[in-house]
Image (tube, rainbow, N blue to C red; front, side, top):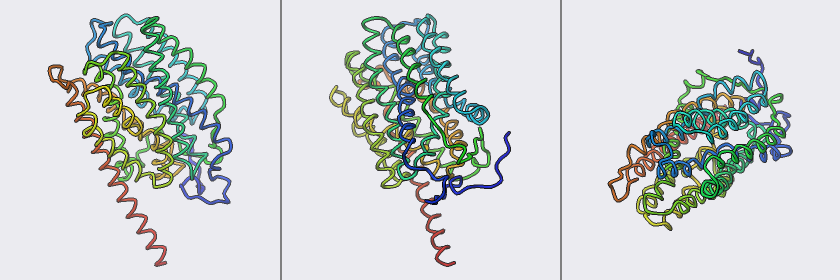
Length: 428
């Protein structure tokens, strides 16, 4: 373990001073980093979010006869859970060797995973390639980049993160249409290979232009910070992450097959996934803007609540193409609120210097939901019902409602602490 610095700067503990060189500049080269992080989101999470298109083909075409629906659910879940599971290792590697080493390793994993998946003929090969290797690639590429934007921005921190997170929506939009077209007109194998080639080139460029401010901020980069984990406000934040991811993965991976289950065509199902990604791309910068303006905890809590309500008010009653598109656009704009605000919320709760350590805990907290939520959804699916996905829809809605309750409690506690500090300062 590296020795911790004995003195702490204002920026490290989350206190800002306009004359301090450690304070985020709110722009400058930070906008280049926003563009780089946008590309990283586009070619990691954007690509992963199109797994629903592949899942729909796997389930309908019987490409791997020995595989069950649960196999495919686990493979898609591994994209997320493996990426999150390696967070402590990635955080420690970044601290010891710098940001470029894990990111270049991640790009290698990601490319190898897609190429290996293109040759897979057995389901265990798909587990290792599209599941484990791609999951490792996303984790080693994405995790070192997520803390960088909060180092460059203060007043517009959520906006910067929102623009960056919109990259996953653009990537999902582009790759949903591209993958569906390549699968239908060329082959499934070439859909994997083209994704590998394009992603590798763009991620290399993004890695080269990114810069951190670690020398000024000197952040702690602990893989597993037990001291932070003992704090109640941290536990509440992690509970929000856990519950919101249960709903997020269920909707993300289930929506294309839900479209097929109500007798829509494969192209209509792909369009549904693409429009969900379009809503993602439009909604995430807006989430960031309103989060900076009206409060990060408040905005995240309200949108999490709306996600849950939309499942009950739009998704369950909607059994037509138009209603499914409406849900994809509205819910797509807000259901990934976690990815926009997790960085800024970690700063709100623990301060800028603790951001990498708290992010590492956040990634670990969503390993289980990202692994098992789609498995649960497919177990809850009832093929003999007129609405096969009724129980998964209820499950997704309830998990978002539970998540919103967590942020309500966090807001109440932080508000009370702020009032107590203000009363203490007035009395002194």
